Image (cartoon, rainbow, N blue to C red):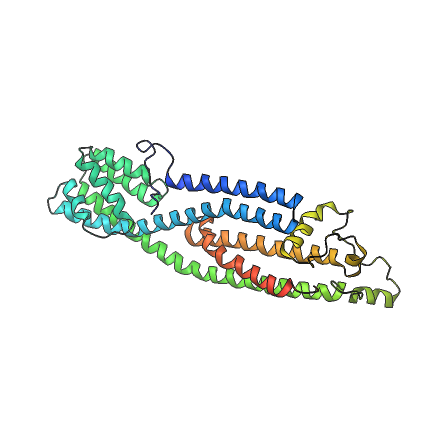
Length: 343
């Protein structure tokens, strides 16, 4: 298990977390370089897929680690009030602070156990209690609840106040805060459900939009689309048909056309969107519209997942678990329904 709460001043060198992140960035960079070489010299599809794998290798480990760290902090904040109450009871029974933490070691507080062990070890080594709590607070810098609670306990100890009553009061406040957070989370779950419903509706609308466009524009067919037929019937049609966005006249659409070739949105034998065969079946237009709808789905999924993570756990990186649901769902639906249309 990764230790996310490291004392940088006393534990020099890169943490396991940093090693994984930097290693994934290096591996992702190498894969992207290889993908660029394959893209330009071997195969657009193979090179594009390798570049995508490189991006995933570079970004996904960081997202997973951030999600795991947020979960660890949430679990520690959940167990922290119970730990403080038990600590106050031990102090009220006449135990020293070292004995109180010794007693706390025998209780299961989940992710708090490792931090309690560190505090106990430092106290047993003779390190003064204020310094031990200050170190504990530093390790908990990513948790405002725990850090502020420890700061209050530390100030009370330094000022000579009744430390037992302070610990008990802080534990009660943390319990009340936990109840408020639980109430908030129960209400926010309704918002998460709404976000999922909206996103899946967006997927359905995207499929319907492309199906309509295929019929109107005649994508993937040598026959003219409905719009062109209507134009000819009214006497407003022209011989040029719809614009070929994957032609040389529209350079900004080139990335979208490449995406179409990477994911097979057009037949594999279509390498030149300006050829007579591609023009006859409007494969250039098909590549552009499929790719732009696919990109919209992926961007919308990532943004929705980030917002869901912010709402549920207070961090966009926590949205990785929502992205694991949303993005594959959109990808599978698009590849099974939209991708084969007109091919």
